Image 1 (cartoon, helix red, strand yellow):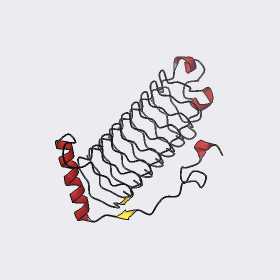
Image 2: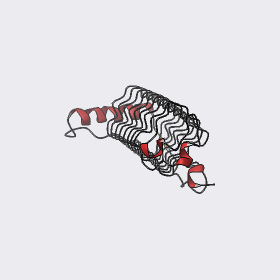
Image 3: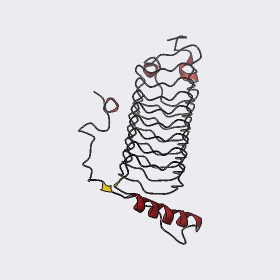
Image 4: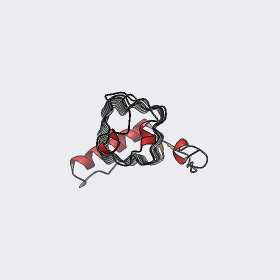
Length: 240
């Protein structure tokens, strides 16, 4: 079993996590109010919201302005974060399993080591986001924007990237086994060591992708519409 075959919660990957701290609704509202004041005053008043290690399971934060907030190691399992603005937020090692993040703005956010198993990230903006070693198994990233995102060593087995933009993303040693990459834009992406076994690559665009090998290119299901880098184009048979 290779490193990319193993999920981040494998015993070899897992780190001991502290017990999350319960937060009341009143405390959440107070922190959000302080954060709003901090944003509006450009950090001259109020306080940046810190939900570090907070227990926020099933929290309702739909549409909230959470730019720059700290959710590191927080439990947000099943949370409602649709349309939330999480620009440059810190969600490293957060538990977002099964959370709803449709159309959320996560540009330049830090999600290193985050658990996003089964999360709904349809149409989410993850440009320049850091998703190193994140667990995205079975996550739904339909039409998500991931250009220039760092997905190196992320575990994306079974994830849905249908029509997603992964252009210039770092997918070095990313596990994309059984992932749906149909019609995905993967131009200029770094793909050295990425795993595509069992993936759907129909009409995916790998033009100018870096580090892609013949073995990788033939691991998944492709068709005549799949576009390859020029250095592989003549080697891969149509429909291979």
